[in-house]
Amino acid sequence: QVHLVESGGGLVQAGGSLRLSCAASGSIFSISNMYWFRVAPGWSRELVASVSSSGTTKYGDSGKGRFTISRANAEYSWYLQMNSLEPADTAVYYCAADAVTTGSARYTAWGQGVQVTVSS
Image (cartoon, rainbow, N blue to C red; front, side, top):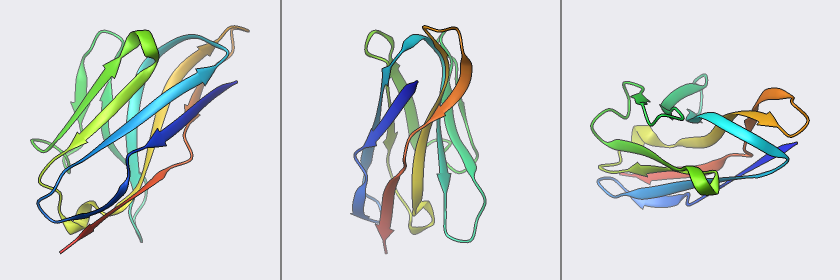
């Protein structure tokens, strides 16, 4: 099993910044792609950003130019730096990862989610 734990959420005023962190642990053989998704009230799940094992990053339209995803491979950790936050960024943010376990199971692991609230 691979366990993901997010941290860094909270309440921030519009225009402010937050940095989310995700740490993976458990029976990890490897992790390739790392993701950040979000679910806003009344909306479906949205890809915010992803980073591959080679460092290639992709962003959803909502975070382009404002959010930056990064990873620390040696620690199985990744981050989402969010700047210029807007009330529309209010959501529960989830990290996810494409993992291979030491038992050769391949699946996408998910964190429990962290609330980000941006006040106007």
